[in-house]
Amino acid sequence: MTITVAIDGPAASGKGTISKAVAARFGFAHLDTGLLYRAVGAKMLAGVDPTDAAKGLVPEDVVGDHLRTPEVAQAASRVATLHEVRAALVDFQRAFAARAGGAVLDGRDIGTVICPDAQVKLFVTASAEVRAERRFLELDGKGIEVTRQSVLADVKERDRRDSERAVAPLIPADDAIVIDTSTLDIDAAVKHAEDAIRAVLG
Ligand code: CDP
Image (cartoon, rainbow, N blue to C red; front, side, top):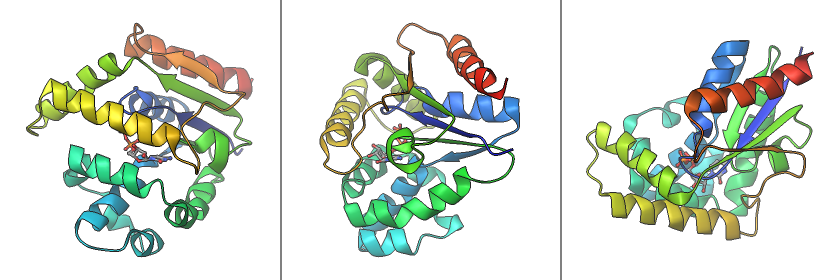
């Protein structure tokens, strides 16, 4: 059967962790769509025109720890405001969503623009402070040099840019289930997501 699970939300909200967990639990494939924008952002930092980069993206481009740095995250959110960049990435994401056997896509506009007919839509959020602390621990653990303040500033700036942009802004779909992970641990958040999927699978 074809089932699409759309998981959107702001930076470091826990959507990636929840996506991986539910994909593993139900045997669905998982696409972290943020990696597509990060790969285009990294190419822009290397001097490539972002629209050309998006049109010419190859699988090797979306692999590598260099995509996880705060500089690349900022570049990703800048290229993500460009209509041509977003348009170049639509077909790939929709084809992935339609694959047999089920797919989980996480990002910012999956339930609103990429897969408005997804059977399950979740919007995962948390306070900026909680998200920044999580991202600080993640980056610090990878040996990337950051401070708590710089990570909080990065998260808030990307939240603002992602929410205020004209094309595909970050907003919950009308029919999305909102999961606030400010005070939920990861197991509880994953359980919410699994319950929503089971309700659809029957
Ligand atoms: O991991 P984190 O939530 O910090 O970011 P990400 O999901 O890797 O996304 C990086 C940036 O790509 C975001 O700040 C968005 O600007 C952009 N993005 C987007 O516009 N649409 C998506 N579907 C996914 C990411």
